[in-house]
Image 1 (cartoon, rainbow, N blue to C red):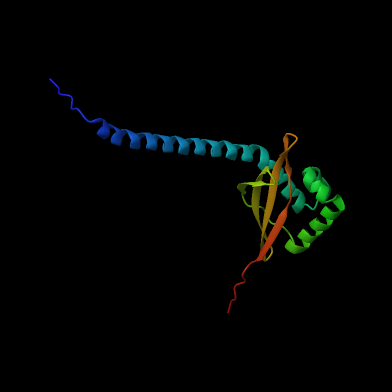
Image 2: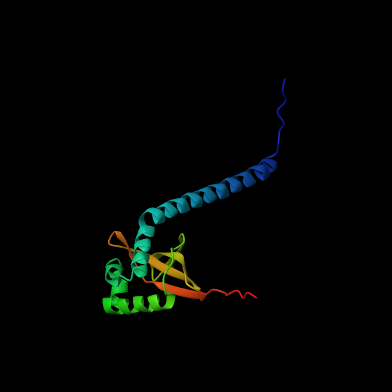
Length: 160
């Protein structure tokens, strides 16, 4: 019949250890991918609508409504009057806002809080405006922690 080959314990361990290491690495990779997928789904379903609503308030120049969805940290640093001034500056900087592109998000830790920053790109006349909207979880709802706009002038082409 069949003969079973005998291998030494040392050879067996040389085969077994790499298999165990590969299985552990693969399991860690799969776990991280599933965790990122859950975070991505949470951002899409819960956080992005808040950021998108805030962005729409910026575009429509509605600081009072935007202020209502900001965090207590934001509200302690900025009052509604200051936010109105900021919105006027944004309008002067950008001119008229175009349609925002799809969002890109980044997760980070700021002052012992988990912060998800959602970034939009908005075409404007002669400029490309990038809007950064960090969000935090506060009292069971996501709130805007701050807002930052950055404008870059578009290159003009010369024709002969």
